[in-house]
Image (cartoon, rainbow, N blue to C red):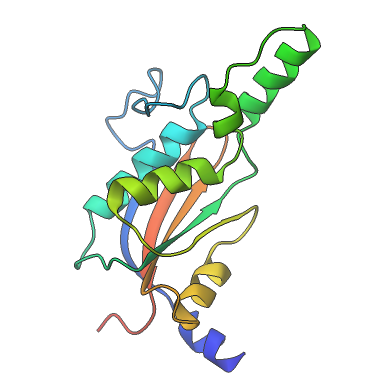
Amino acid sequence: MSELLEVHDLVVRGEGYWPEPGDDIAAGPPVVPGFVVSAFNPMAAVVAERCLSRLTEPRTVRTGIVLVCDGDSVSADHVRQAVAEGKRIGPLFFFQSVPNSIAGWIAAKWDLRGPVVCVTDGGEDEAALLIGDGDADQVLIVEVGADQASARIVSGGDPT
């Protein structure tokens, strides 16, 4: 447990947010192919891209992802209403109903080869465990809420 506490002194190497100054909030985040109706997945993708493109040092291939969210409530509500009305549900909703789908999409786009974890709260403990256990050198923590999202990439150790 003391190793976890030592590693939990995470160093933030880059950050990204939605929205940021200049973002067209009414238009929403850029569309992600294969994800429809909800802004949940596009918000995760845009903050990950912003964060990864702002790294203060080179990214390692063994970069894990921790997605922190309560799920995509807009998509869940859409599916719930369609079922209640006896409508057919499009196949994309099965794919995007799993929050890890966008984490996998981010990993593939950015060639991140570390573990992918999805939690409803926290993120830093999981990142510290992944780094401390040697499963990842860096971890991208993506937090998605109803209308905003953030991402930070962290590593263990002293920033000096």
